[in-house]
Amino acid sequence: MFDAVIIGGSFAGLSAALQLARASRSVLIFDDGRPRNRMSPAAHGVPGWDGVSPAEILARFRDDLTGYPTVRFTNDLVDKISGEIDAFLVTAKATGSVRTRRIVLAHGVQDILPDLPGLAEAWGRTVLHCPYCHGYEVKGRPLAVLATGPMAAHQAHMLRADWSEDITMLVNGVDGLDQRALAASGIRVESRMPLKLMPGDSIKVCFADGPEADFAAIFTAPGINLTASPADRLGVGLSDGPMGAFVRTGPMQQTDIPGVFAAGDLATPMWNVNFAVGDGARAGAGCHQSLLFPDFIPALEKEAA
Image (cartoon, rainbow, N blue to C red; front, top):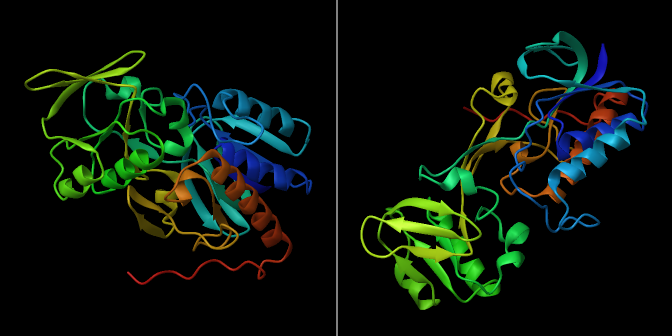
């Protein structure tokens, strides 16, 4: 019987584990070694690690945890979770079943990228999602926003305000964009449908007709998916976000299932390494407090269907 099983060993999961380890609680971390930002060559805006690769930062996090004898890692995927608080059963493909008193969900989300040839190959390098994470490195250069929904206008206005005066909105067949407001802000509107992207040091957009366009980077907002994930199998309550549903949590990252906590990209509509580390620490502390005082951190109330 573990005190806590953490599903996901990236920034949020390892941060949660550290809090529990420092209370000498037994922790098992399940992780498949495929963090969401593995394609990005550098993590920016992370104090102390600005510009360091995500893989290197995670390696440092894991090294820190090796000094705590109550923490174990397993490279495995969780298939099933059953039971209840103080008596959960977590089943994984290779490890089999383990018992645990608490669960921390930190497995992230699945990105749903726009279906455009060449985009997946450039994801995290010249096709980006966050100006705070990646905008400074391409500031002042020609940038584009590939529309996937109404949030595209928000991205374009942000980039035009503080990162570049040369912004193009690739409408991509999306309805509901206020093209007048975009043009009034000095944002070029490109209504031709993109056919494919050609990644390189910059990124080229090929259209059905006319000349191609070259940009330092393209920003876009992927959809997210939790279907068939451990959070989905458990049936934790969700909230609607601009890019998809995310796990609803309370002040200490507790969910609406007693004994289950959630942190990281699966539990917020805004994704950032700093947020994941902070939410993970809060989830770890909340998980520990609930082991000591089960009534101190009650689960959220279930929302009406």
